[in-house]
Length: 112
Image 1 (tube, rainbow, N blue to C red):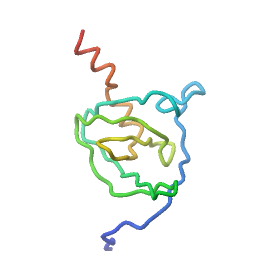
Image 2 (cartoon, rainbow, N blue to C red):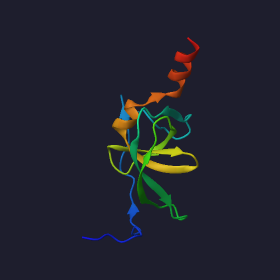
Image 3 (cartoon, one colour):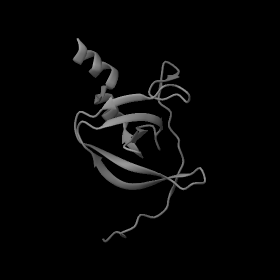
Image 4 (cartoon, rainbow, N blue to C red):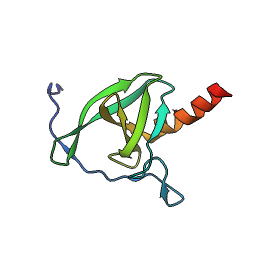
């Protein structure tokens, strides 16, 4: 089976919310961004805005170990979250974020 070289435009409905004790634990609109350093290469899906308020999925790629990501929104399902990285937006799995080191913890460890 061959796949087309260009990805079809598929609208993505954001359906997940990350809650812990009835409060969003990774993202809450208006709150400071949570920044993490990735401990290993992880799979990510580009989140592409169509300019009309809709988001579609783009290319699947790897974000390299040591990349800094900012959690900035809900994912496309309950197992993913939206992050910003190097002026782009991506969907990554929650388990990959949970394994990452928060930047505040990393700077505290370096200072201590």
